[in-house]
Amino acid sequence: MVNEPLYSLRMRAAEGRAHEDGGLHISGGERLSTREELEEAVSALLRKALHHSRGTADFINIAIEKVAQEEIPVLAPLPISTYCTTSVQAGRKQAADLLRQSSVSDAAIERGFEILTSSYNLRGAVLLDSQSGERMDTRGTKGVRVSRMDWERMSHAIWKKRQPLLESVRVSEAVALATKVASAAGTVAELCWSDDPEYSTGYVSSPTKGYCRIFHLKEEGELSGGRIFFVTAETNIADYIEYLEKMPVWIG
Ligand code: AMP
Image (cartoon, rainbow, N blue to C red; front, side):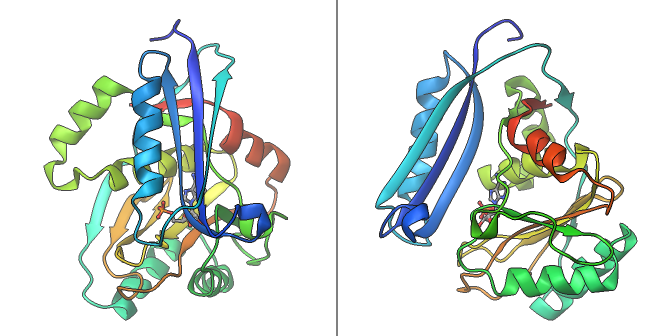
């Protein structure tokens, strides 16, 4: 695997028109692939774009770039825990507790919730100062899209066998993303719930707490959602974004 050419794949799909022309974000996806697996990876991204409960994709962009490869780091997936909360109120309280335990301030937690509950068309993540709650990036609704990460095939098969209840592609993808985010210098914690109206389970993740799935972070049928990355005030934001967008990593 190490010496084969590697490709980064990025997909984004929107309804109505392209994102930059005001279209509604439908879905996105990021993969790392060898040349041999490229066709299957493109097909998987296309399937994801074409079948999404947020709507019908009228615009689909799939970008494929060869990745200049040296030694690519392999990150161990974050350990998973699940909180079976039974209401949105309880789910959000649990999320706030976990964020607090990861050293995010109450003000920043409140700001994170405000942003996610009022975002219906966020394509990437919003970066917030983990103490003041101030926004640290200038990307607007485009946000910061974490790319160039994927599961190493053999390790993924073993990981899936160990977590038979978490077989969904959605959880695998989210754990890969959260693992890369947690590995970035400056990350304090992450808060996520999907903008998919049919999926209300979200998560808090952090280097100290791992990947904490929480049932009911929003009501079924709601279109709101997105990701918040809480970072330390000292974080060099340009370097942080460069790492998340450009540095290839395997999860395994
Ligand atoms: P999903 O988990 O695919 O339902 O995505 C939910 C939300 O998380 C999206 O609307 C984006 O705001 C954000 N998001 C999804 N993928 C990424 C990514 N690769 N990097 C940063 N944010 C993302």
